Image (tube, rainbow, N blue to C red):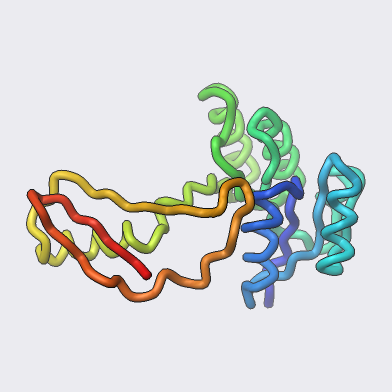
Length: 183
């Protein structure tokens, strides 16, 4: 059974990352989107055949909707995340989580009270070269590095889905510094 998801905010990060990821994931079904710009939502509706809502509260009531991605500017995260959690949805929120620690704590408190998952999209934690470095360190293959440098690039504000980084071309160890180079 697929997880029914929605996306709140239809800007660059949503159209370049979240929406294509949900569309291409066999375990998710993108069913709803909302953007304060009705035109942006309608464009997604037309392109992907999902329901675009003109009102956030109505979108959160979409039949069967279980989780949402919050892809709006950070000054809106607190209110949107809290509303989504209170409506019973699990939430993946783009970074930064909130404008300050007080807002972040409020969001966490509501997540605990509603027993819903609130996850912040700290994607570097799951970036393949970081996992590979951890694996090599754990196996004591590279010794004790003093620094780790990885590079992640994209074409500016237009985001792309990475199909996979491929195999490393080579791995170097100089003065304890590890660098991964990918094709």
